Image 1 (cartoon, helix red, strand yellow):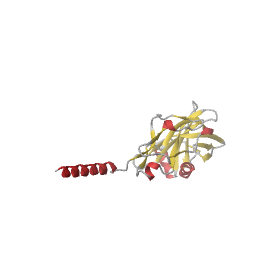
Image 2 (tube, rainbow, N blue to C red):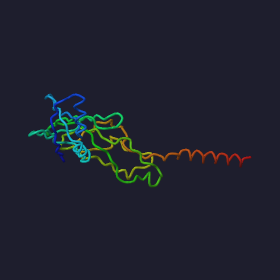
Image 3 (cartoon, rainbow, N blue to C red):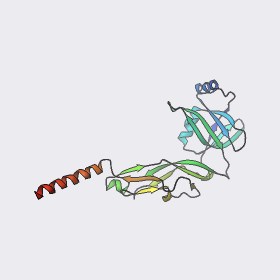
Length: 203
């Protein structure tokens, strides 16, 4: 399990003017909290934030002075128009406890239903909600869709990750192979042409 170290600084002012000043310095306001202990207001650089997203890590080591806080990202607040990250909540974690988090889903292979039947691979969800110890959090989950035929799908209930509890509804579809857009219309047109031909022959 990769743990990314992230330097941070304490935040003194909590007014809007203080947070605006932080952002001008390319720093992002954040809060670290751990169970019932008092939350710690801090900030991290925009560059470190970019490294967090690039790393693909789920667990981080927030460095604050001489102390280190192992944590995960619990919530991110975005600007409704610009999508700029306004604030981040970091939640402290321990090695022993089981925590809830999310991992990304990707696919590998080309389905039979796409190669042979001309279908299209449709993905319904891109994240899995899971619960496990931080040492058992997978980097991500890859689904092999090679044997998937037309009108077949893979749901939450069809996958299993060692030592990990899946929290999404079991019947939730993850990926499926469906007819290409317009395929049904084409079939209907062919059926109409056939019917018209048969009527002409009878006359």
